[in-house]
Every structure is written in C-alpha cells, then in structure tokens.
Length: 179
Image 1 (spheres, rainbow, N blue to C red):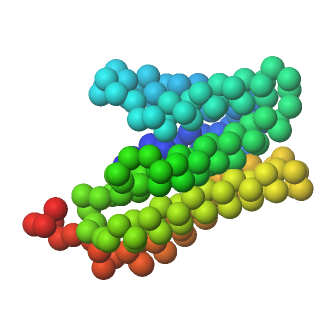
Image 2: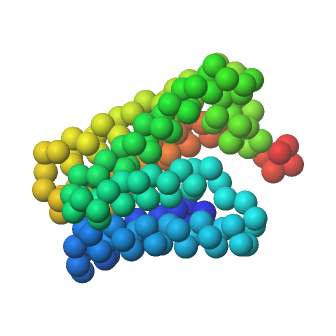
C-alpha cells in the first residue's frame, strides 16, 4: 500500500502531462505531494523524511520550472533526490552503528554486517546510476521521452532492482515466529 501511495503522484503527473503539458503537470504534482504530506501529518502527526525531502525538492525544482517556464528544472529533480539518497546511504557507513538499509530492514532479515554493508553499497550504486541515467535521458531525448522514461524507465529499474535484491536476500528473511 505504501508503494502505491508513493507511486500515485508520478502516475498523476504522467496522466496530466499526457492530457496537457509539463507546466500543468508540474503544478499538479506539487499540489498532489503537498496534499499527501498534509494528509500524512494530520493522520499520523508524522511525515517520513523522504516525503518531506521530496516535497522540498518539488517546491524548489517544480517552482523553478513554473517560474522560469523551463522543464529542465523538473527533469533534474529525480536525479537530485536519488543522489541525495545515495549520499545518505553512503554516509551511513561512517555515521552510526548501522547502515541505512539495516535500520530499515534489520527486523525482517538476519545477515552478517558485511552483507548489510554490501547491500547498502548496492543501493548507493543504484541511486547514482539511475540519477545519471535520468540526466542522460533528459539531455539527449525530447520531453515526452523523458516523461515516459520517468514513468516506466525509472519505476521499472527500481522494480527490477528490488526483485533481484529480494531473490538474492531471500535466504536471510526471518520467519514470522522469528521476527
């Protein structure tokens, strides 16, 4: 359910873009994510940091897109978010006693510290790669191709990465009575 909630703004952005243009789609994306954050706050009195970061980046890059009428800003937003995530995952190797992925999934899996570290570094590499690929597509293809790539390419890459990771890590998943 959480994945669908995170996917919803991208789906709405895609649909609005196909019906109108990048500027209206960007405005709707900002409003959608702001509404999600507000709903999350009113319902749980807590908003995950990634959601707040996403909203902040949308306000900056989406706002710049609307203000300057230049879609390049909104095209950079996924890359900036992914590179910030890569930096955070990398920094977790040096800050604290657990890497980020271990903090997120440590209750569901029992793995040696070296495996947690490798998994965390795999996420760093994934975020760096997908961010760079986003910029490559934005710079070398037309706007419509970039929107399609954002919808299907980036989401597809994430899905493939998560499934492959799940297959490799399945031997470490704890049974419900162990968790």
